Image (cartoon, rainbow, N blue to C red; front, side):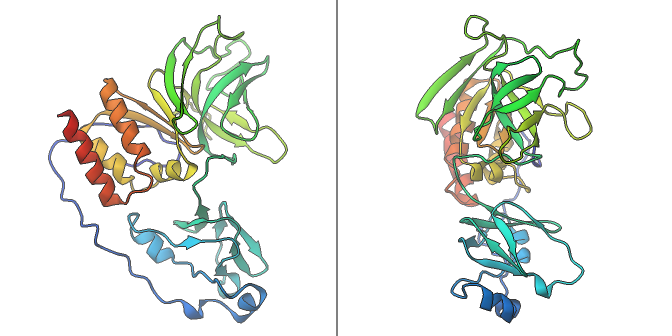
Length: 319
């Protein structure tokens, strides 16, 4: 069961039991004291020099990655020859050094991508992010969608599979319930023409960010890079809640997050995770939806072993 970025997954109950690996296994950390060059140390604050540990980060997703703070130097480019690396959010290049510009956990993705994973409520749109949006209004050429960003995003009416001027998408009347603002306010969105001037206002959709330039409204699409609808589109029924962006990235990580792995062995449900800190859960019974939602919301500060124990206790209460 692999939950890669931008994937809606359907979990099914699996027969049999699997041998759980002991969480006591720890990755091997190496001493990289001579890793940084003298020039990098002289140009930056030597009080905090954080060595980059790709082997340790890739060894086990259960082990906590190194925590970094703004100003930390994580990589010296002068020691790399004929190698290309990709920098994600939270990192920037300063001469021959890669430094950190926001606090968080240093992450590594094969073959050569590094970024800082932070936990925050505010979502900053990035291209190719898969997010959960709520349609708030419609125009002649675009739908206005709330994706928890600084501004509303534009979803062109032609950004659907087979979309044409004569075939403008019309979402079916449906409703979903969701917790907003970290669960302090319960709001229910119902699609009805009497509540909004357009018949699709309030629809929950799973979309992909196409453009996210500073000073401009993000542009969305309900198709993948090949023009297919894939997993994108309107989400019917179900329950939507908000979480931190760090938790949403953890749920989409590979290998599968321990809490989702444990839930998928016992329960059958659908889940869609957006990188903007929104999660949608749907199942055949309301009790299953509540258990899955509560388990995910409570798993952010727990280790892999603690998440499995929590899921077992939740399942024992309903048996």
